[in-house]
Structure formats: C-alpha cells, structure tokens
Amino acid sequence: MTSDARRVWTRITSLLPGHDDLADVRRDPRRDLLAGLTVAIVALPLALGFGVSSGLGAEAGLATAVVAGSLAAVFGGSNLQVSGPTGAMTVVLVPIVGTYGPTGVLTVGLMAGVLLVALAAMRAGKYMQYVPAPVVEGFTLGIACVIGLQQIPNALGVTKPEGDRVLVVTWRAAEEFAHAPNWTAVGLAVAVAAVMLAGARWRPTVPFSIVAVIAATVVAQLAHLDAAQPIGDLPSGLPAPTLAFLDPGALGSLLAPAVAVAALAALESLLSASVADGMTVGQRHDPDRELFGQGLANIASPLFGGVPATGAIARTAVNVRTGATSRLASLTHAAGLAVIVFAAAPLVSTIPLAALAGVLLATAIRMVEVGSLRAMARATRSDALILVLTAVATLALDLVYAVIIGLVVACALALRAVAQQARLDQVPLDRGDHTAEEHALLAEHIVAYRLDGPLFFAAAHRFLLELTEVADVRVIVLRMARVSTMDATGALVLKDAVEKLTRRGILVLASGIRPGQRQVLDSVGALELLQPDGREYATTPEAIRAARDHLELTGILSADTVPQQPAPKPALPSKSQEEPA
Image 1 (tube, rainbow, N blue to C red):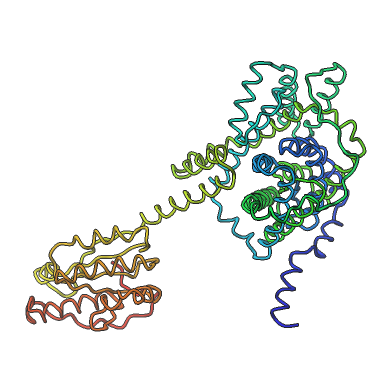
Image 2 (cartoon, helix red, strand yellow):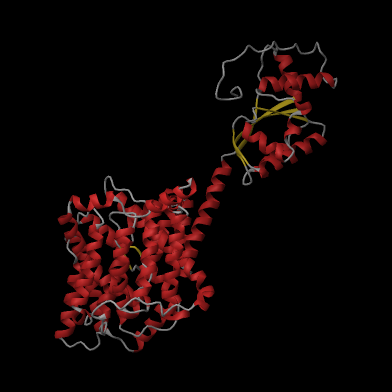
C-alpha cells in the first residue's frame, strides 16, 4: 500500500466506530439504558412538535428521531450527543417547504448529508472553535424567538396562515384569532407550558413535558373538546426506504438551501457536542467524526420520510444530567421512541396540537439563558452589538445569514480593536557620550520613531498620515523591532510614506527589521528605501551613527562638532534585535 493510500485509509478508519466505543458501552450499560429511556420520554413530544412545525407532519419528526438519532449515535463523534429534529432546523425548513414542497425538503436533507460527509473528509470540524460566543448567544436567542413565534397558530387554535416569514405568519394568525377566538387551544397550550416551566424548577429530573401532554390529551378526550385539534393518524411503523422523491433536474435549484441546511446542521451539532463536553469531566468529542455521523444520519433520514436532523442541545443536556456515559444512551433513546410510538400510534395520534405548541413554547423560553445574555451584554459594547445583530438577523432573515452577519461584524470589530493597538511613538535619542549641547544639536536634525504593534491594512494608513506630517528634520530613524506583524498593505503604505519623506530631502533609516518583515518589505520594493546603500541596521545606535555620518557628509554637521561615539562592546545574543527605548 502506498503512503497516499495509507493516509486515506487511516483517515477513513478514524471516522468509523472503534474498540474504544465498544469499551465505553460495556462500562455501565444499565445506567445508559435508563438515561436513554428518560431522554426518549422527553424527546417524544419534541419530535412530534418539530415534525408538525416543519410542515411535513408528526410522522416525519418521529422518523427523523428514530433513523437519524440511531445513526448519529453510532457514527457520531460524541458519546453523549442526542440527535433528531430541532427547532433551529425547523426554522430553515419552513420556507423550503413553502417554496419546493415536501419532496424538496427530502432532497435538501439528502444533499446536506452528502455535504456534511464532505466537510468531515476535509477536517472542517475544528473551525467551530472560531465562532465567537456573542454570535452563539445571539443565534440561540434568535432561534428561541422564532420557535416561540412558530407555535402561535397552533397555540391559538387557528389554521396556519400562508407565508414564509414567521413575523408575518404570527401577525396573520393573531388577526384570525381575533375574528374567531379559540380559548380551548389557548388554555391547553398555556397549561402545558406552565406545567413544564414550573416543574423544571420544582423537580428538574422529572420529564414534565410528557406528563403535561398526557394530561392535556386526557382532558381533551374526556371533556370532548372539539376545538382541540389532534395530531391525526400516524403510521404504525417506519415506511420502506425509497428515493422516489429525488428529482435530478431540481438538484441545481436546491443546492443553496442544501448548503444552508448543512451549515446549520454542522454549527448546531458541534455546538451541542461542545455543551455536552462542558457538562462532564473527561468527555471530549471528535468534531470531524461528529460531522460524519450527522452526514450519514441526514442521508438516511429522507429515505424514510424524515426531515434533516442535528444534534439537539436540550435532549443532549437531559442525557448528560440523567447519568449517560456512552453512546448506548442515545441509541436507546432512538429505539425507545420507535417502540413507544409504533406500539401506541393510535394513542399518540390523539394528542392535541395545542399541547405540542405548549411544549415548544416552554422549550423556547428555557433556551434563553438570561444570565449569559446579561453577562455578554455587559462585557463590551462590541459583544453586545454582535449579540443583538445576530439575534435580529435570525428573526428577520434566516439562521445562516444571521451567523454570517455575526461573524463578519465580529471580525470587523476585532480588526478594529487590533488596529487600535498599533502606535507610532517618537522616542528620545540616546545621549551616549555627548554633552547636553551636542545631544541637542543631534536631536535638532535626527528624530526616531518606534513602530509598535501590527502594521497591516486596518492600521497602516494612520501611520502614513502621522509619519508624513513630521517636522522639518534631516534624518528619521524607524525602530521596527516591535512590529508584531506586517502585510503587503502595511509595507506599501510604509513605502509610500518613505518616498514622500525622501522627496522632501529627509533620509529614512530603519533598525531591527525582522526576517519575516524583510520578505514583505522586499516584495513591494520598500526594503531598498529603508536600507540606503544596502546597509542593514540591527540596532538603533547603529542607525543613529549612520544618520550622524549622513549629516557630516551633507555638511550639516562638521566632524569636530559632535565627537564620534565609541564602538559598542559586543553584546550577548538576545531575543530582541534592538535595544529598549
């Protein structure tokens, strides 16, 4: 086997389950089985609700939870991650359903799965760490608002109005409710949400969501509440896998939505896995393997009529809190859902839609971490701005655009902060062996500046303005040992400033140029301007002596005006190429 083939094989095997996973499963199976059953009970109303909200029906949510949940559990990169339909993905799917129909959503899910596998092969998982915390917080806040608004039609007991903008749909639903109020649906939704929120404070380990849904269903059946519209008939098993929905001619038009779904699935899954790591000790997920597992899950889910899936933060948190230690728990969650639903499909079909709306309203409220938002808003004005912009963009546009906007603004503000650290300071000349009168004479004709910090495109033009406005002197010495980084723009701006000073008859010398900076300066032709006659000045005293020699040659100073400084003693090697100011 060649070296290239061996690397490819190693890469493939690193994405597949290994012996360590089997060892983890065997460590405490009883504990994982109990945790998985608990998560299944919590996930049942969420899977039903998100399936309904997506527009493909409750059966699509169940198929996603079972198929995608089991595959992501086996092939994913986290021992604790629980995957399935989520509110964030529902937000993206609603407009896709409105534009392309249910078959378009299935095709988009399949394409997104292929893209996720490709991202895993390219080792793109590590880039999640570069998403700033304010973007994540704003993203989560915006998702919570959208999930809550999406439930308003079912909570009010009205038919979902036409439209793909959640604010427009919510407004139309409120208008329809005002004309024909359905207080039964409102009462059920509010009661379920209240039980969940109060129960979470009283007994966090009890799955009050399923308790509230069962109670609401019993009340609706016993009281014959016709205004409480039920879910409707559900299949008693998974449909046979099929590709009948796939239309090759539509792949081109569906590429952009598929990219958006893949980006969201990657972002939410890796974020959820990171949250799970933070809640435990000794657990660390493999981001590339997580993308691979989510890719396989999204490839398989549409074959059974399921919607695109991601890692679910809420269900993953329940999994961790109930004591899960391996991927057996999340696999048990998927198997438990299959047994619960397909053995009791007639009973599940009687659950009121308003009760599911209450579950999702409570879920949206619990997604908002007020303490984290307050801390982020108080950190810096930049963090607060990024958070608000991301949240508003999530609500007004869509999730992918929101993340892009948040990242762009965060990068711009970060560049601005870095650019503000760059300084151009005038520093006094070392007096050396000169008398006060002699030193004053040199200082009249020679000025030294210290460049401190990054010299790049975001800060370079300010240097140009400051440097070219120098007073009438004969020699300028640029001390460059403290320049942390330099790009082509910074080198070009510096070259422009030196050329302008040279045209005024001012000689510009530089000291302490680092090897990396020398390459950039040389590439734009600035190095030869900073090294007259090809002379290199490693330290500032050498550059000052060269400046004095220049003044003598031009007749500004006579040889006996200022005594020659003795040659410096050899110094021990140091990390800096320049003496401190």
